[in-house]
Image (cartoon, rainbow, N blue to C red):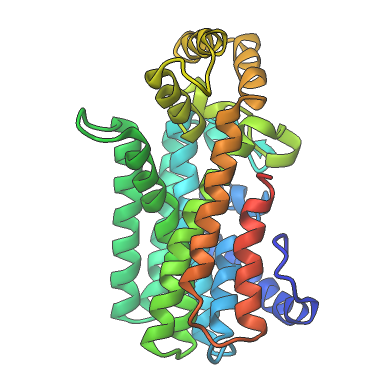
Amino acid sequence: MSVPIGNDQLQDALTPRLELIEERLRDAVAQSDRLADATSRHLVDAGGKRLRPMLVLLASQLGDGSRPEVLDAAVVCELTHLATLYHDDVMDSAPTRRGAPSAHEVWGNSVAILTGDLLFARASVVVAGLGPEAVRLQATTFERLCLGQLHETVGPAEDDDPVEHYIQVLADKTGSLVAMSARFGAMFAGCAPTIVKQVTQYGELAGVAFQLADDVLDIRSDTEVSGKTPGTDLREGVDTMPTLLLRRRIAAGPGPEVSAEQHAADLALLADIDGDLTSDEALASVVDRLRVHPVVDQTAALAHDWSRQAIVAIDGLPAGEVKDALVAFAEALVARAA
C-alpha cells in the first residue's frame, strides 16, 4: 500500500485483496477494440495510490470484509475515479498524469473524453451487479463529480465567498467519491447503518483534506514526486486554495500582519498569476515565489484541520485496529503536505 495505515499486520492482510482488485481493474478495462483497449489501460498501467480501493477495504474491516461484493465495490470506485481523470486532464490541459503523458497528449482530446466515458460505462456494468441501491449511490456521486467540475469551471457567483465556494467544489469533486468508497466498504460488509453513516462522513471530510494537501503539492513538489507538472492549475487560470488565500490577503490590505512592502510583493505576485503563464519561465517564477509564501502554509494547515475533522467523525466507532488504521489513513493523506 502506498498510504501507511499504522498496522503492519492489517496492511499485510489487505495486500492480497488489493492485488485481486488490481487484477479485476485490468480485466474491467480490457476492450476488444485495439485502440479502446490501449487508451483504457493507459492510466491503469500508470499505477496510482489506489486510495479509494484501500478505503473500501479498510471500512469493510468494520464488518465482514471477506464478502465478494466488497471487491466489486472497490473496482467500481476506482473505475469511476479513473473515468474522471481522463476528463479532468482534458479540461486542465495537464501534460502528465502519474508520471506518464496524459491520454489527451497521446491520442487527442476527443479520444481521451470518450475513454473516460468508456470507463464510466464499465463501472456502471460492475455496479449493476451490486444492486439498485449501489447504482443509485454511484449515480448520485457521479452527479456531484460533474457539478463540482462545473462549479470550478464557472467560478463563484458575485455574492459567493470564493473560499467557501472552493471548499464545496472539493467536497463534490473529491470528497463525494472518497465518501462513497468508505460507504460501500462498510455497507457491503454488512455494517450497521450508524457505522455506515460515520464512515461516509469521514470519507467526505478526508477527501477535502486530501485535495487541499494536493493544492500544496501542486506548488511545492516536483513532477517526479507528484507525477504532475507543478503549477498546472495556475497556468489554466484555476484558483486553488493558495491563490484564493492570496486574493483574500490582498483584499484585506496592509496591516499588523502584512507590511506595506509585503502587500506590494503580493500585488506583484498576483499580477503575474493573472498574467500570461504560457511560458515555462513565467510559470516557474510564479511557482517559486508561491512555494515560500505563507498562503501555502495556511493551505497545509487547512488540510490538517479537515483531516482532524474526519478523525472526529469516526470517534464513535469501536476502538481497535481498524479504527486506528482509519485514523492513520486520514493523517497520511495530509502528511505529504507538511
